[in-house]
Amino acid sequence: MKLPLVATIACGIALGGLAFAQDKDKTEKKKKPAAKAVTVRLAEQNKSGQSGRARLTPAGEGKTKVEINLKGGAKGVAQPAHIHDGSCPNPDPKPRYPLQDVTDGKSTSEVAADIKTLTAGKMAINVHKSKEDIKTYVACGNIGKAGGQAKAKGDSSKKMETKKDKS
Image: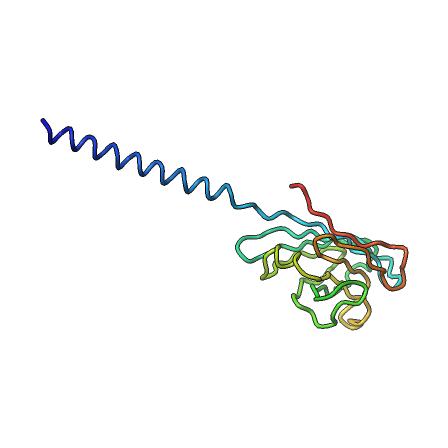
């Protein structure tokens, strides 16, 4: 009679411990804050007539999806876009992360950096006029946490900003 009772108690303790361990895993997962999407305003540069927004969204471990939407560009022209170190209007000319060319105002890329890395330092998204005229910037936006204000070349009235989405 004692053996079945001991076995029943041992089973109960084991199952209780397993349930507790699973609850602890759920609690640890809940505590980890999810990274939020960020929207960056891309201000006109060099009187290009082009402006818009870029949306940065977490895309898994160590990756960020970057979607650019620009208005005012020439149809069918591929415009190189990059994430650069530094800030607008004159970020470091050497790109840090290449993005897909903006064509007809749209570009979607995946960058091998998490969103926290991109928003932690001074970085900017920059769009160029064309592959042939790579030195002419048409739009730029600061990624950083607060975004801050920066004067865009040729358009000092524009203010660049970054905001965290609530989604």
